[in-house]
Image (cartoon, rainbow, N blue to C red):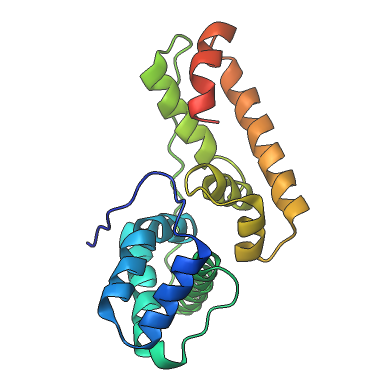
Amino acid sequence: MVHANSSSDLLGPDNQSEKKWIKAVQRGEKEAFKMIFLTYYDHLTRFAFQYLKSATEAENVVQDVFLWIWEKREDWQVEGTLKTYLFRAVKYKAMDYLRHEEVKRNYLREHSFLDEISINPSMKIEQEIDKKEFIRVTQCAIEDLPERTRIIYKMSRMEGLTYSEIADVLEISTKTVESHMSRALDNLRLNLSKYLNVVLMAQIVATIL
């Protein structure tokens, strides 16, 4: 397992620094490649996990993207910002992996009499909960959001991407991103408000929503 040193918010370098890194990588400078890797790796693996639901496969996908960049460094071209480029590349790679896995599953279904079993764990939530429990409940509520809404919410709140950057990565309009974010926040507030009184909710909701 690879871990990069990164802050909780993905602010990233400025555009000039990104351009210098890109040109340095194109020249084969390993230190610049390492800086890009350390800056974005953790954020990209969390992003890939939203599609793959496997930490191992998420890491494999991100590592494959970086390996491809290094192997093709002399001809490597980046359109837009480096951050947007990397998130988009990881998304494409993750989708390719999922398509491949679907082909394998279809093959197994056609040649097996075994039925797929889906396990839906249930969770009992107490009426009276403290801050730690509320955070846990919030995380569950986030995971229960519709897939696209959940991905957009996490890209915004956990990976620090702007609405415009999210739109570029997912190839949708900024209005669509805004719509998903509004839906996510309304859904979370509705589902979580019953667990807290107004005062307690005001104290901690800002750190989560």
